[in-house]
Image (cartoon, rainbow, N blue to C red; front, side, top):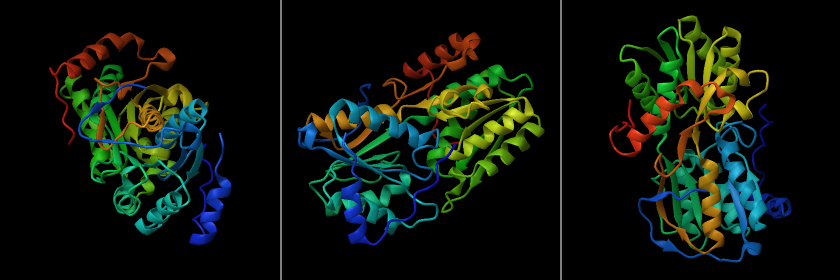
Length: 353
């Protein structure tokens, strides 16, 4: 279940003091697309990590929780101090900037921003604090000598679960529920559609986005997710893939009510979703945000942070499909065959619908 969201930050001076008081003591090799080495302090005991969540925060059972898992692992292994802050629905870029600025001005280095919504804020604040290292997940536009861009080949992992949906569907009809219609989530849709059609060219695919930018509530509205998925099941779909953050819980509820199947995203949601609905999840598109966050912090501690784009694709182990519950064991060999074809270049997956 989602936690209650943290309220907006107080005035700058008060919030700065709160940040200091609240600081809690305490993968795999990605393909480097660009990036010159940028040194950082190698002393783990002195590293103070600030992490700014996207909408939904820790407890969303998906995207943010994956980032939290990587932070938790690094914290335990390297003895880091950490401070985690959450966004609030409908907040402005100025509020995001202030969150990052307060972390930087109160000694947190490095700072990790979870989600593309921080793009403009990271670019601006990183320029103000050139000696602080920043990382941003899911965005390649916020560039700078002290910025690392942790991005993923979501379309490749989504191709695999699209193939799984088509192989498992008995009705020849599947669905995709996206949180917000932005280029990032369209990568999930594009891969899913391509994978399903690779298995069955005439399969019926329903698509629905829960909100349009600048409204990002589609990532944190389980009721709307349930309504969208229920409509798809009522229209004949028997498998629905969700890339909708905290709204995905509603998709699972709809699948349970319909006696149908669902596909999770980012985390292995057969493990993280509410136990009452976990059995409807046949697989999840794994997006190894935890690995990316852990790797980044490991490199920071070692003084080997790289700026620029670090892309986590199938070849790098950055995306995959889950097998928890054994519901895709009968088709795993077929999914692995598609996986190998993507890795060796026989199949190229488009990132746009």
